[in-house]
Image (cartoon, rainbow, N blue to C red; front, side):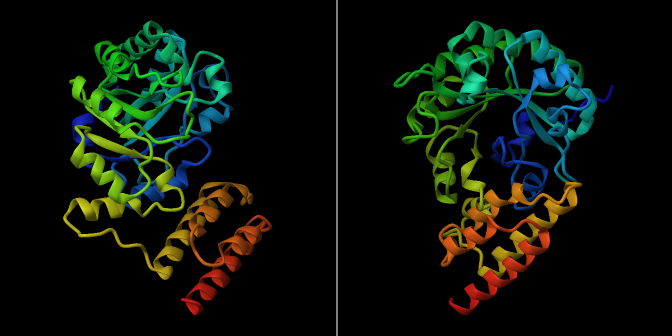
Amino acid sequence: MERHGNSVISLLKNPIWLAPLAGVADAPFRQLCKEQGAGLTCTEMISAKGLHFNPEGSGSERLLRLSPGEAPAAVQLFGADPALMAEQAARVAEKLGSDLALIDVNMGCPVPKVVKHGEGSALMKTPELAEQVVAAMVRALAPYGVPLTVKTRIGYEAGEDCAVEFALRLQEAGASLVTVHGRTRAQFYHGESNDEAVARVAEACSVPVMASGDILTAERAVQMLEQTPVAGVMVARGAIGRPWIFGQIAMLRAGSPQAPEPTITERFALIRRHVNLTREWYADDRVARLRKHLIAYATGLPGAARFRSRVNQADTYEAVDALLDEYESWLIEHD
């Protein structure tokens, strides 16, 4: 059995992490974010039930694959059965070995298909069960030396703020770090993230607390790090179409007066890098998985609406390559 040298404290030397983004943060995107300066990347959330009941052929199993150069990386599991979660945590640790930085438990997902099974953010309604899940997983991971972390929200119902009490329970159960998204489950992703509620959790806990929610710009990330007691930030939507945000944050933290945007040439070089990583990673020729990223890359640029329409019609990598060449040339001409 190979023990790990990773610890939460060492991982926080670069406290700007990529959040687990369902349907977005596949291996090519994570590799790109790592190359752009993310301190840690995390898989999309993976069902512990899926790993248990269909261990060889499930989509959940495929989500465990890490990209070259990504390790050590985090894996996020979701579920509400302490024994099953502990079993699969140990299995993931055994499978990934030293490539695994930590295992995170999803206690923040608001979507109905997760919540209706008592999983994700629904665990905030059953804090005793949430504590049991964490304790069981911590025990299972102890022989491997793998830290267990939790990502949650400030509450479940609208207007609720139970994050301090909930986080303290998780800490007592053995969680090494807690990430708090500053919204309730009822808000989903609407309204503003409640920074004060997140800060109260960071002040109350003895383990590191990371902030999540509305980290959409480098300036916002640095503000959270400098003006609140959080130990780090998780970038989610702010990295979609803007993976260079990690480099921008590093520049601001190093004393740069501003976070410059990439030039058109730099932007398109990075987009092509993303396309090529995706082409190399998947065995099939489906380009549909790239569309959300390509559309996001064009957001705010001249001609974005026409580009978006044509992206939705492109069905081969060759068509995507040609479209990128054409759009880049057009942008340079009209700059």
